[in-house]
Each structure stands twice: as structure tokens, then as C-alpha cells.
View (tube, rainbow, N blue to C red):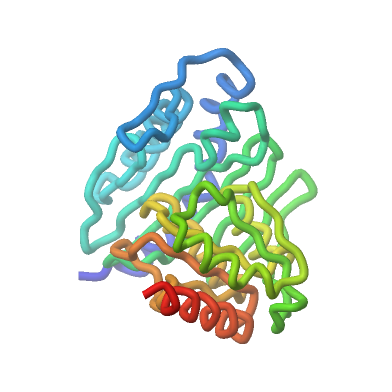
Length: 269
């Protein structure tokens, strides 16, 4: 059964309160000395990741005790109602090395479909979130609505991805098929790339092998800003998606990029 509209609206409004929760924890550890552990997939994790997720869970559970919570560090299971999907530090490698382009992701899904989200960039004091069908950018200068750029041609597009190392050989070839048609390409950024796309600065972001917690917060922010985002098959992203993601500033740009992705993958078969 779907949650009452008022419950969804209250959950989305609560996103605005969460940066103060996670930032207070993260600030204690950024550019400080701490132990780095490796998870089963060899990705790094720190006390900052674990502590920030614990703080966010506590705040969300206190406000919405009936909602399910899924986090990168503590796990959990989404249900058919409203569920919160947390990545306490997206870009842990950046965090570990003192680079400020890491973020906290909190997504809200209902029935497995992402409906609201927040990208908080604590080290640079920027927050991107959804509110009443819009995507907002919040900084020291205030709060403004954001829209993706009106870019319709690959040859005019600025494309980004986090790292070539994050792709399989097949995946990198598919990414390159699109990249080679674009005006420019940049690497690094993690979740910040998606925020920049929503705000009209980047035009395409392509990644794969992502986790659910990497994606759920991003989708509503991108969509509300006018961007088009699917997996590499052109299918809408849900909590059950395969981890591939193609985000483009416009529908026309997405159609062209998707065609190159598909063509590259078909050539490998």
C-alpha cells in the first residue's frame, strides 16, 4: 500500500534537516588521522562512514519509526512502503585523501521507486535536494531552484565519470564510445558529478557497477531538474536495477548516448 501523501511530503521535508546531522560527525574526521578498513569488495571504510550512517539512522528512526532504512555500512531491507537509502560518504577514497568532493546521499524510495533525494557536500557547504517537484541548490548564498542544461548534441556535451578503474573492460569501451563523441570529458567527482549535471554544468554522467545506495538519492534530483536518467538498457532506475546508469541533461542527448552504449555492447557479443 502506498504511503499517505502527507507522509511522503513530511519525509521529503525532513531531508533538509539531515545535513546538520551527518556534517557534525564527518567534520570530526575529515583530514584527521583514523584507521582505514577494507570491506569484502576491497572498498575502503572508515569510522566516519560508520558513525555518520549511525547518526542518520537514529535521526530518521526517531522521526519516522515505521519506515525501513537501508545503509551501505549497516545494510537493511527496503519494503513496499517508504524506505530510506543511505550512503554516508559517497567517495570514501576522496575523503581518505583529503579531497573535498565526497558527499552524503540519502534517497527516499516508495515501492522500490526513488521519489526524493539529497546530495550533501559537507566539505564545500553545498546541498542538492528535492522539494515539491523541484530540485534545489543550497549554499551560503541561499537556496535556488536548479535545471539541467539545454544540451541536445553529443558534440556539445561535457561528460564525466568517477574513474576508468570503476569500469569493466566492456563497460569502459561502452563509455568511451560516447565520450569520444563529446566536446570534453572529466574524471573524479563521485556523486558531485550528478549534482553538477542537475545544476546545468555537466551534460552526461555514465557509470556502472553501482550499488543501490549510490543511486537512489540521485535519480529524483536529476529528474526534477529536467534530466533524463535510466540504466544502460534505457530502463527506469529502481531499487532492483543492475547498477548501470546513464544520466543526460536532455531527452535528445540521452537518446543519442544510449544508442552508442547499446551499439558498443552489441559489438562485444
